[in-house]
Length: 190
Ligand code: AR6
Image (cartoon, rainbow, N blue to C red; front, top):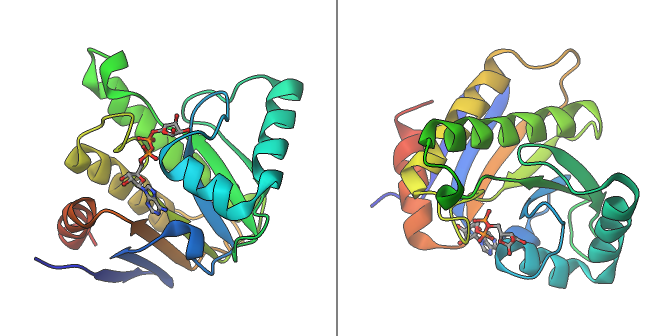
């Protein structure tokens, strides 16, 4: 099965491939966080360990000052020792928390949509690397996850913000099976 996807829509490249997010040389790496920004498992732990203490420290300071980060919203910290410049933390929905699966889907869509606008508007980022938000510990089936990330990306590239800086949107999955599912869904969408 196919391991790589690249597509371009109006000067913005969208790519999907297998890799470790913490090694990406991009302006922004996205973290699939929890509402308390307590990075103890999954990609959050990998980012926290790769970046060093700075990431958890800034995250905890944010929660002390502003409270928890609601599902679908975004904030950022520095990236510490990682090669990227910033980490945007967002919170995806938990599959089990909602009998109404449309809520899960719209929250996941909103999370990525807000992340992309945050990266462009607040951080003036050119490149961003994104994990399969909610498709790990939070249990959202990978195809449902990929479809919502596609829809949010399509919406962003079709109507980007004024003076958009984002040119390079990457979906980087450490898990081969997740990556294959992403490649399949993205291939039919761009
Ligand atoms: N690079 C790329 N993808 C990765 C990496 C990596 N280094 N490590 C894991 N993944 P998860 P969630 C993939 O569980 O479902 C944390 O404890 C992984 O294979 O990290 O949103 C948070 O603090 C999966 O496909 O995020 C929250 O409590 C994807 O990243 C909770 O997990 C997302 O899996 C959030 O759960």
